[in-house]
Length: 112
Image 1: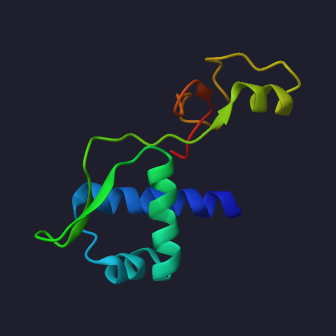
Image 2 (image 1 turned 30 degrees about the vertical axis):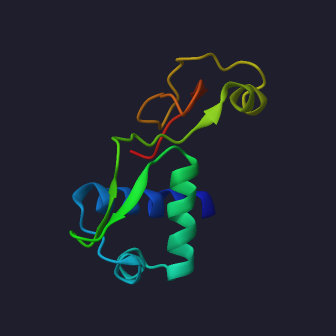
C-alpha cells in the first residue's frame, strides 16, 4: 500500500506541475498533503527520475523545463523473479493499463 501512496503523491505533483498551479513550496506541500521537507524530497526524487523541474518566480509555480513523461514499473529481471521466468517483454498483465518503458529498458504497468 505504501508504494501506491508514493505513486499517487508523485502523480498529484506531476499534475500540478503540468498545470503550473503549484504555488510556492509551502502551498504545494499543503495541496498534496505533505510537509515542505517531504515535498522537497519528492521533487528531488522526480528529478532523479529525469524530470528537469525548476521554480518560476514570475509565475509562482514549479514547472518542467523540458517535457517529461513519468512511468512506473519493474525491470525485466525483477519481473522474471516475480513470475519465475515466465514473463516476456510486451506481455500484457491482468489488471494493468499496459506495458511501458521506464528510463532505459524497464517494463511494467502503471496505475491507470
